[in-house]
Length: 314
Image 1 (cartoon, rainbow, N blue to C red):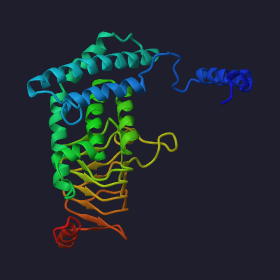
Image 2 (spheres, one colour):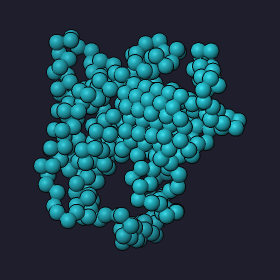
Image 3 (spheres, rainbow, N blue to C red):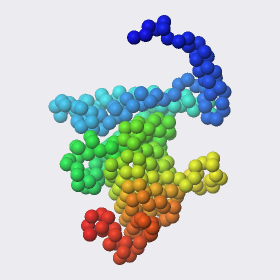
Image 4 (cartoon, helix red, strand yellow):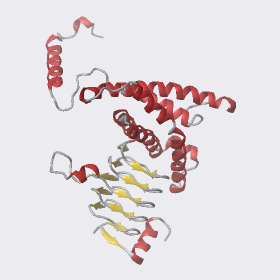
């Protein structure tokens, strides 16, 4: 093994790196000089603690007697929420350069208190998501298998945590949580997306759901589905409405098959079925079926027959 003295001279490289950092910090396009920033590693530990508190037996690896379960949950919650508060304080320090008024450190504690009150409802929502996966996938052997092994459940669990924090005013911490889910599952859900009950992503790799997407109850997506915006900001002139409402609305009981791409503020009506590899830029009426190769929208009896066929009931 080469000795450290055998390494090449690094002074020129160190100087180039320093100059690159200086140039980066002198730019004004959203770069801040503050050293503190929410930590990817620490936020990952926050999520580990919260997931263990939500599902102590299956995901928290609690193996003690049931009468000790609450104590385990409390310990993980206290640890996780304390870590979370530190990361939100770091986020506030980061935003302080752009703020007119000073952030009060107590605001981070308030967000954590409000977030803690959301954990019970989050657990209930994820339980519904697991049930939807069990009903939607005949290959599933048990709810426990789904909770531990299905990437779609991991992604929606992380999303429900991130969405609560996003709504309470911690968008950077929320984005970090969504990226942790993306890294683990290949499913990219912006924490701002609104998702209803009993949501199921089957297989899941490559699914993208944008910030202003709204998804109703009992919706099922397959892999490589995109609920995206029609044009990236900064490339074309975008009206104000499209800045605030850029992504699709998917109503209740919709199924979207693999590879479908739905762009812009279009509405997929209740009970519609979107076939694989369809490219959609327009609304779809309730109960319709959109299928390749012509991406024709079917209605009435024709839609019902294809709908039943795609869902395996013909």
